[in-house]
Image 1 (cartoon, one colour):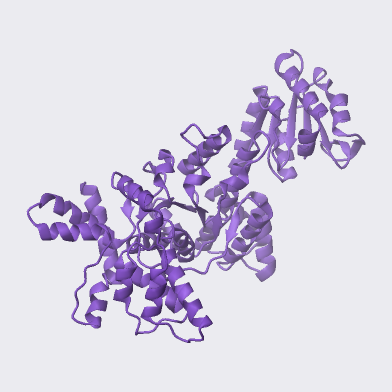
Image 2 (spheres, one colour):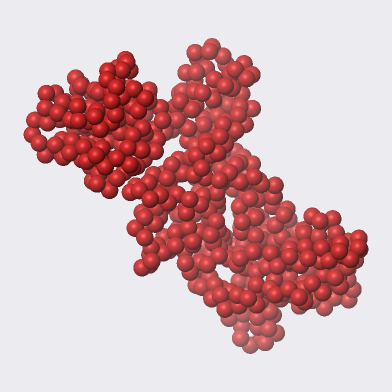
Length: 567
């Protein structure tokens, strides 16, 4: 396979370039042994593992019982007689705790680099990367690349041919997309399990692939698998953002056909805005809409105490995300994940992790859909805001009147306490400046009070009474909200709410028409998200607050995109 030839060629080039220590982070010893055999060209290969000590590289029988320090002392001069490969397996503990081992490795590395007539290359093979500071300049970390789609399809076809079974080409292509991110060993194991389970290979095996990928996440501890039950119906408002996600969902539902047609692989979305306004809920709803797993990346969990450990953890976490793809990779509070980047407070490790993540974002061609959320856009490194990092950027403002009505209805219905006598309009007027979390707290506290008082229903007055005693986010973070809104107006970021699109358009018309005071007054009200409603009866109140119907959301999305292009 081409992947093998490429790996062997790269490995041979490092040996020829006199790289003294090659650190191979991989679990499959057989794959690594095959690669080393192809580049040895007469070199003397001596292997060490913690179980048997010194063993023969080819037949794996024990040659001498010893510890790593004794092994290095015994073999350090072998490079004078003939080219020598020292293969050291799973020695990360010794690298952490044994300074004599580190000193011996450094001595051998310096001889290999500077001493004429001495040829020794050290191969450290371990899934755990530990690089002592003393060896940082001598070690080259070597990653085995994962197979691409063509190579996965070739492996599936070979498996099918060996079993002499028939599988449609469409199914092979779909399975190959699901296998993306796994190595050859893992693919072979899952294919064996699928065949043993049903005696065939079919579309239903995609679920088996997913369950096996979930095992990888649980065992690694690098990522967190999030269970979700949310859907777009649980989000009050944000119609523009929801329409955009529905477009991307169509691509994920027909991923193989979309890629064949020439559609770019969806990258992800950055959602910034006010706290408690549904950004995290949107991440869960997106995974539900796409019908793919949701995993959360916590950058703080990746930080290690040894040189190179944090970078290895980041690389491992991203590889795991690729392994379970298609998936949604959720990064909550992005501004805190890479805090200090671009300023004087950023550490070297954080800067390297940030650069590593940016490079992965730019070069990734996998089905990992990133949903990044942030509260304070002023603290987000500007590199994230550049075109091409994400498919789109959305701003979530405090909910307007119609969105507040929907949010209240959602929480009342979820708790089975909604009734037709509740006056939504009165609640809308009294909850201006409340975010989604504030509104949920109002409903929750009102229901709790009704329960303690022995009542079975809640009324509008109950809710209004709770509202009066609730301090909204617009009061507690007034200055910060003003600062964020002013900053957003200077940036090319899509509003998540459909009404904000209309509001943005009307504001631009108002700036051109300073002779009409009525229009100016209405635009000022809309900027604050205030609905001025003067109905004759409650029925007309409800009809006035209802926005566009679902079938018009797509039209609004296209209209806004055309407007942005003209600008």
